[in-house]
Figure: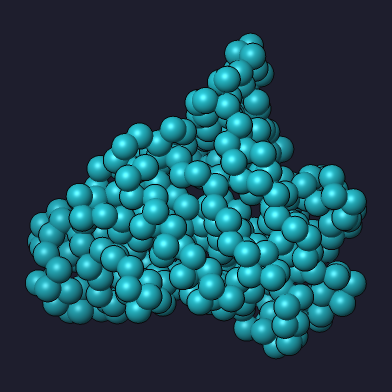
Length: 336
Ligand code: AMP
């Protein structure tokens, strides 16, 4: 989706990916297949590119940092470093003055017991690194479940988070231009199932809209503190005490996919505009009601039938293997 937006603006993309079949390469001019740790391949790749960006937050930062690319890497290495570690991320937001779930770092069964004594149960244990879509997570409903939870996440460094009592989940998709202008898309209400985003809905409803201003203040402070250029997404819980930050993605985000049809300028186009130093486009909403639903696993097989609804726009990612829980595409329905 980024490569399509770039092509529309006259740019040619070169996709760097470790996997044999990277779907972005289907719509890009060139590709490199190499590990993110391959310093020589990375060096050759970044030499031939004018600007380097990423749409995966677990790109290792040390090999990139070693290349001293400065502003050539956008949104930036600092944003990656913060978002890759839940502890770094939560500490960053707490230091900015934002509300987070109560949290504690855990690196042994004993420290997990101590953290539960402190934070209480129910709580969620999440691996510090490499967790996404509910992976690397275990719910602890009572202190007696700690041992099982610690094993189930692979006994890896983790964060224990207190359970947040929320009315709704929402995100603030944010873009910052190269000259520091910050814009926001309107927030959708995000519904998750089994830790995976199911759908994003706009209008988001009062539980969310009353908290958007406070959430945007946090998003603006964060994107400026990271000195990031491009799109960053901040996920929040709407609680009776105001927005609680859950996490930040230093990239275009699934909860912003609706912007392709539902906004004057999509998150993908504005990301490309920002990183290439162009003026930002309007983030305003088009339409009166929008619904983005993910197609997970074999639901993609219903894709063509979904198009019998004239409000529906199908995005088929072209991934070959429809594993359970894998996001294979999405459908956005737009009503006027
Ligand atoms: P995450 O991978 O941190 O985005 O978590 C995936 C989903 O699990 C979130 O979107 C929430 O629905 C739920 N969740 C995560 N952390 C918490 C928490 N501390 N309290 C309540 N629900 C949570």
